[in-house]
Each structure stands twice: as C-alpha cells, then as structure tokens.
Length: 115
Length: 115
Image (cartoon, rainbow over all chains, first blue to last red; front, side, top):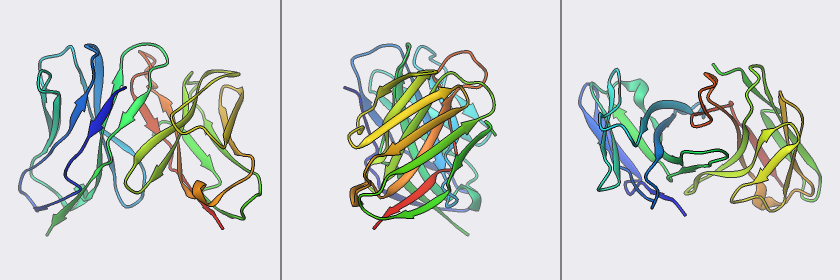
C-alpha cells in the first residue's frame, strides 16, 4: 500500500517571501504521479502542480515549483513571492500509473500568509 | 472549471435516514470518484466509477453505495445515515484532456451533517 506523509501540520510565511512545504511518500512502484492540491477557505480543491516520476526535471507552474527527489521519495512544494491568496490547506497526493489506479492523499498542511 | 457540479451543497439529516448525493459532469469523462474529507485524514476514497454501471470500492466504502446509470451522473447513497458519516463529500473526475486518468479535478463539495 502507498502512503503519503505531510509531517508539518501548519506553517506561516510573510507575504512576498518563499516557503517550502514538505511531503514524503512510500511505494515500491517505479511509475507514478505526484500532485499538490490547494484548498482555500472556500473548500474548493484546486490542482497546483503535477509531476511524473519518470521525468527528472522538476515541474514548475508560475510561482510554484517542486523539488522531486525520487530516491529519497520526497516531493516538496516551493511557493515563491507568497501572496495573501496562497493562504490555504495544501495536500500532497500520489497515484500509480495504470488503469483504475487510485489517488492517495496526505493529511494536509495549513499555510498562512501574513501581510 | 472542469464542469462538475454537486447537489445538494449542504444537507442536514437525521440518523437512520437515507441520503443521496449527486455529482454531475458535463464533459463526458469516463472516471468519476467520491471522497470524504475529515479533519486529520485528508481526503479518502469512498467509491469510484470507470464507466456506466462500472464501479468499485475505495478505502472507506462501508455504509455507502453508488450508482452510475449515465455517463454524466454519479450518485452516492448513504442507506441509513450515521453520525460518523458527517463529513464534507467531494466528487472528482479524471483528466478532461483525455490523455489518461491520472489527473483528477474536483467538484465544489457537499457538507453533510447527520444529527
């Protein structure tokens, strides 16, 4: 069974600064996907970024980037130039490639951006 | 916007009553999912569907049933609601680009309170 661990329940960052959210996972599979989802106070789940395990290059989406360390089974999210709108809960998630595969979530981390 | 709606958005019911939640999508996606979100647990998969009348269980399926008689609708039924089923329920669909099922997009959620 796959597990996803987000060990930090809460973090805080000053507006315009950079913050890194940690995520580790455990699997014996070699082909999989990793995701970060954002859940603002509206409760909507929003895809932030996606990483394919076979790609060595780290994914980036504007101010969001990941540090994917496959050997260490680590997948951290870096948010640059933090904005007040980044205040949300962030979930790391994992999925093995293949038909009918399931998404496994971490417990989430609450990020607060201070003005 | 992946064209996903959920109804109702909020519901209060009493223990022992049946409850049906509806997920509706407009973009003909093959895969649909039901999750529940509880504090300290992240999102957990209840059931999913990989086609009309094709469904399978997730990790927390006890006390829930699902049906999918048409591509666009995926129904989640609590046959006899219990207080432990008080939660926020999310529907999701797979990647609308059609390249594979690996990326899931979420509906707005339904908050259910069982008294």
